[in-house]
Amino acid sequence: MRVVVVGATGLIGSKTVARLRDHGVEVALVSRREGVDVVTGEGLPKALRGADVVVDVTDTPSRAETASVEFFGTATGNLLEAAGSAGAEHYVILSVVGADRLQAGYFRAKAEQEELVRRSPIPHSIVRATPFFESVEDVSRSASYTGSVHVAPVLTRPVATEDVAAAVAHVAVGVPLFGVLEVAGPDVGRLDEFTQKLLAAQGDKRAVVADAHAAFFGVELQERTLLPEPESCSFGHRTFNEWLARP
Picture: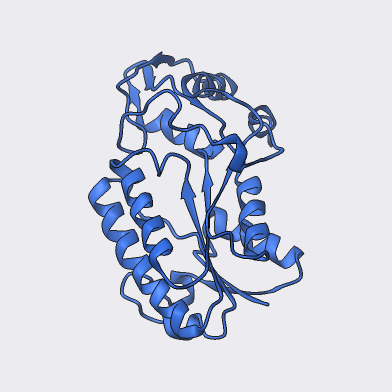
């Protein structure tokens, strides 16, 4: 089996490559560092040649709605065309929990990406992840005000990138799901509570304000938007506290 990972040098991509190699499959790396541009299509036909499985863990450089929609629409279209020409038998993408519930912001972009994949004749699998632990750290920066951080008090199960990569790799070497697998962390709590834990661990004295109107990835959330569906979810092993205690 030859698995081509697109976005192979990114946060999830690099860990997915390592996991796939643990499975003993042949892995090819595709990224801009390798001279491939998913937006222009430059280098894609050659990069995907001989692929049995294509794993798409690319991400947009901007979380703004317009930029995200444009990126995923163009990049995913180019990738599906190249994967089809290469004779790929399985196309796997990484999406986000909540993409099926929201039609705004980054979530809209991921929903449209999912729809492109579903409409493709290539057998597919969609892996949706809850916010990464690193996303909680991003929130603490992007929602910062003088002396405080405003965070939506919504329920979630933040997840380790290692657990996401393991789920993506496991799906990639299996039979196509023709559907969705969600992956989440073992801890459930409110996003503002996780943010408070993060700031405390970093010695950051800013107050965390539970703000129902605080945006996440460019959109206001409902209480359960970021929670996975238990019947279609794989739960990771690494806890948020373990991640906070890392060297």
